[in-house]
Image (tube, rainbow, N blue to C red):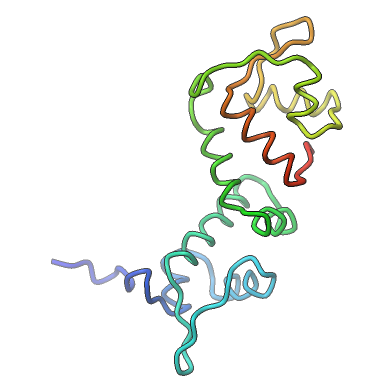
Length: 160
């Protein structure tokens, strides 16, 4: 027996069905489209149709907002491949030791966090579990997190 409350398959969703699928209002979906965060639909006749890529992008936006990013930061990430940020989020969510551990010094930490590292940013990285202080200006971090943080810094997202 099929679930009658399940909207159409993601390959052919109207904006109302996309709204129901993602839990985002039609108004917010249209606002995200006007900001360039979400591509427009495929239009046939007078109806726009959305697919799985739209569902995935809206979920990514919701996840980024839940992580505390504002729409300007999200626009910057989405414009430079926001899906890469999703990989960064997944790396942070994995156990700290996953992917091997590396010892880094203060200079490496500066590079990892984007070049301008304040004591507040180092404390924030420690609190978030990105690095563990070992003393003598050395830190321990997951190799996966180091690579992801370096990539986020490379695309222009600063440590703040």
